Length: 159
Image 1 (cartoon, helix red, strand yellow):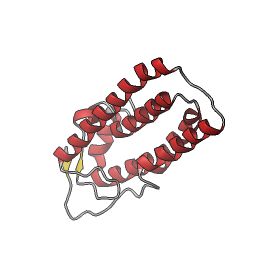
Image 2 (cartoon, rainbow, N blue to C red):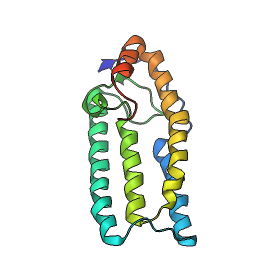
Image 3 (cartoon, rainbow, N blue to C red):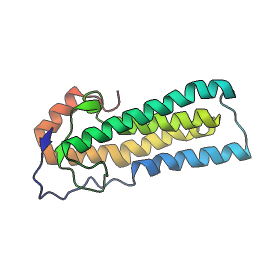
Image 4 (cartoon, rainbow, N blue to C red):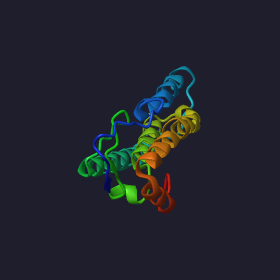
């Protein structure tokens, strides 16, 4: 972790809050299930797969959020970054919180037993990459320079 000058108030300028982007795909997908049912998986199996995925998504999100808080920086993309976080789950992925949101999205689709949200997921991920992740990466490059570039070289974007 590297601390940044507290006077910096720059933000990455993402197009929307990441949870809202995921909801923009999930909600219409679930709504379509009521209009045109497209089952994904049967009930007992949906719970066997879905609930452990929810637990994994929540546990990894909590770990990532706590790691950011311990580093003294905020999770909210609308607030200035004050530290480059490279520990905890950020050792394995530059975007562990977005992986958590993706796992949660998948687990909800499984628990609701519908394929519809899965059709929207590629678009959600495209918006996340172009509208959030690329902007955050440019922002972090400006703030942390060479240190962020080295982190980027050794740590994958996803997994």
